[in-house]
Structures are given as C-alpha cells and as structure tokens.
Image 1 (cartoon, rainbow, N blue to C red):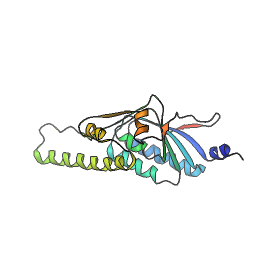
Image 2 (image 1 turned 90 degrees about the vertical axis):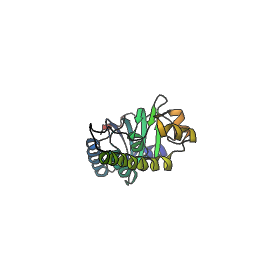
Image 3 (image 1 turned 30 degrees about the vertical axis):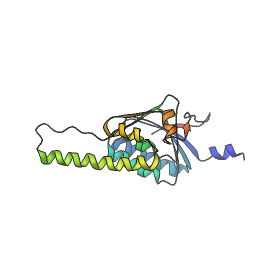
Image 4 (image 1 turned 180 degrees about the vertical axis):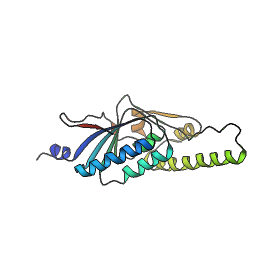
Length: 186
C-alpha cells in the first residue's frame, strides 16, 4: 500500500462553524463519539468562527487536544476571538491564503446600575479568562513584543502569512479533502 493511501486510511474531513458555545460543544462531543466508533485516526477540521464563550472554547481546546485522534485544523476564512484557542487544539494547523485570525482580551458589559462589588466580580472573571487564554497562546504561538502590545489594548489581526511567521499555523494551505471522501458538518 502506498504511503499516500495509508495516510488517507483512517482520515476523515469535517467542517465546524458558528459561535463557540454550549451547542458547539455538544456537536463536537457527538461528532467525536462517531469518530471513535468509526475508527477515525486523523480528523481534518475546517473551522469558521468569530468566537463566543471563553469557557466553551477552553473546553473544546482541552478536549480535542487530548483525544486519541490526531486533529488537524484549518482556517478557510476567519477564526477569531476564543475560536483561535479552539483552533490551537490542532496538532497540525493550516490556513488559506485569504484567511485571517483575530485575538483580543476578554470583554463584558456591566449591567446598568451595577454596584462596585458586582463590577469587581466581573473584572476578576475577565482577568481569569485572559490568564487562561494567554497561557495557551504563549505556549503555542510566538507573538512579538509588538503583537503583545497591540493585544493588550486592541484586537490583534493576523493574515495567514502573519500567522505562519508566529507559528500559529504550520503553513499556508487550503482545506482540500480528497475526491470521493465525505465531508461531514459538525
């Protein structure tokens, strides 16, 4: 059997789009249950998401990072906010030439008339979320001091070429399932 044929055996292709939330977590859990039952060894996942909830993104990152399945992630358009942390679960990571990434600090709106103690709790929660996501970014991505300075106060946008330079992706490459292989939407 050729090496290319062996690489295709046990590989499956998926798309995952939408908000990072409890619904996405549930869909991924169900999809992985099917993957394990089907004997998938490598899951190629195209992600399209502008972000969502930090805890759900962290859950998906931790879950996919620790599966007995090799996860390969792709950005075909936009992966932003907490979806970048989800994207980093891939042992291999790729992005299309025209794709973009965006990372930023956590944010929330205070309820009208919130008291100082309630505001303190909101701020502490945001700081905890930032610490969790920043630790994953620092472990996986080599952002420059200039990048971190932008990230501290604003949205940090990266093109696919920029992402390759900081090791967010392995290389600029499109999601390209082999002819005849099923692509499953998660």
